[in-house]
Image 1: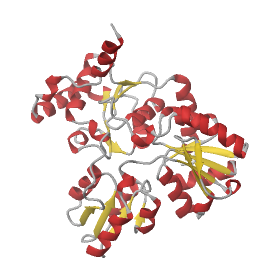
Image 2: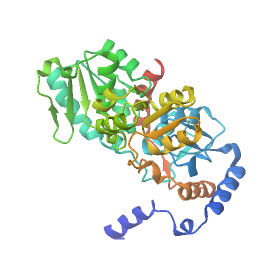
Image 3: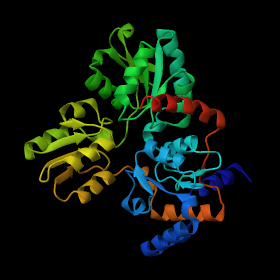
Amino acid sequence: MNILEMMQKSTNAFLIPDEYKSLSVKEMEERVLKIKARLGKRLFIPGHHYQKDEVIKFADATGDSLKLAQISAQNKEAEFIAFCGVHFMAETADILTTQEQLVFLPDMRAGCSMADMADINQTERCWKVLQETFGDTILPLTYVNSTAAIKAFVGKYGGATVTSSNAKKMLEWAFTQKERILFLPDQHLGRNTAAFELDIPLEEMAVWNPINNSFEFDGNIDNVKIILWKGHCSVHENFTPANIEALRKTKPDMNIIVHPECPYETVALADFAGSTSYIIDTIEKAQPGSKWAIGTEMNLVQRIIQEHPDKEIVSLNPHLCACLTMNRIDLPHLLWSLDMIEKGERGQLIKVPDQIAKDAVLALNRMLERA
């Protein structure tokens, strides 16, 4: 077999067979339900908030990535976990579950652009420069929206993971350990948490550009407290100050709530900012008749709109598409994955190497101990 044939074979392993493309929605739904019935408690399907409705309707639990990984780990009866999310989420589930439990990703192409903006080689090069520049004064933190290798790096060097819900608490803890923090991989969550919740001035934050392997900073580098990795969410970065300004002109009485992965300038203009759970809870507790513009992923916004007909709810950016990588997990891929699980095939198995998992658990546990 030549190199071209090997590449073609590898690519085809990730492509859904044509037979699934010809099935009707009804046929696929019936087959999914039958497989779930046959496997019973041996199968567990977690579904992330950003998944399509056609997938979420079959989820045994919904939530954010860490919550779903924890629920999967607690469900000791589940032998097979078909994680409906993206790659780093399935990795976290594999890290937290037992060796006997198998975690699958229905479409192996479902990655995360943010997580992919920080690879381990870039991070190690960055760390070398940081040590030469600042000495042993830095603690690394990583958003859970990162690869297992990055979580392991952070765990190895005494740091922890953070979520959008506990970022403030974890930053506060980190500053009791070291003078400075390297925050991976989302610069916006790091900047917004530090500025709006800890009152750290922007002048004390530098951006690290992993492509150029250099700082983006004009001031005195010795004054820097936080080094922000130059990464972002491709969805949340598209909620802009212009979106808010336009809405203020047409609907000045509408509340604007955004996710902290949005740019600093957007969060500064919004009325409320918080994690996915915070957004969901805020809308649920809001008075009937209240008006809301939400700055987060479109599948979730549409679901919130359907669940709250007593409120006027819109997307802050109505022209924004749903998360493209999340949308790779659809009904045909879910059915295909469940078929393969039932047949004993392991093509979509997510398996984190033991040493990486061991170091990543250190980072996760440091966070969970302070939750």
